[in-house]
Length: 322
Image (tube, rainbow, N blue to C red):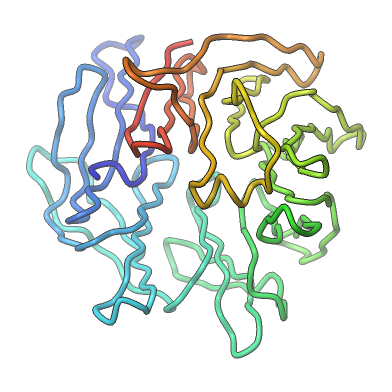
């Protein structure tokens, strides 16, 4: 697959007002980094080969990339922290370093200056944040539990137990400066996404056998039941609006487990949710020429006018103009 991860970056403007969006991505087989503009003009950016890249995480500015792949023993997880050279007319070599082995969860901060990950210990993990520019590690939290999903927003780290529809999950917020932490959410099959400013948390729980979407306003602690049945990772937030891929028809199952495992797939509609007013707006059914789309990894450009997402059925990248 060509697209293993994608990031939206602002290209050089043709005039003072033109906006040129480009998608930056890595080739899964070789790790070579490319970018493509809205006219499908592709440019190769790097020469460094990283075979069999399973995952490539891009910072918001598209400069820092975290490559994830298996060592030659096909068991050890390797993580390579890389940076792109300033853009030139010819491909350049990546510069970077390897960090700890067998990191299960890693995420780049929203400001693009650091990343947070779970560093394995003989028992459990340390939750660590590291700056790209000086490799300085700060341990935020230590846990005897190793199965965590991490996320980084503003000056906080979100720590959520790996979700399953069989048990209750819990989500915590850690303040990076004071290291104070507090439980914010709980529920069976819990998954969550927090906005960059920390104001809203959109989350899903599966207490009734289907995933139900709620929105928490962290300023007043009000929780809003949207009435929409989907998973929070099928949503994205921009310019005071959530956009969610919502299954047109959903059957009772053990969510999110069966969706992660691929035994359940969806044909999605696109909906907008305005959390301030609780207004819901149906936009359109998402489909190809032959099939519906099961959208995941939703991202939106800085104008709030174009959504990018991956079809889980085919791993192909799509764009939708609002």
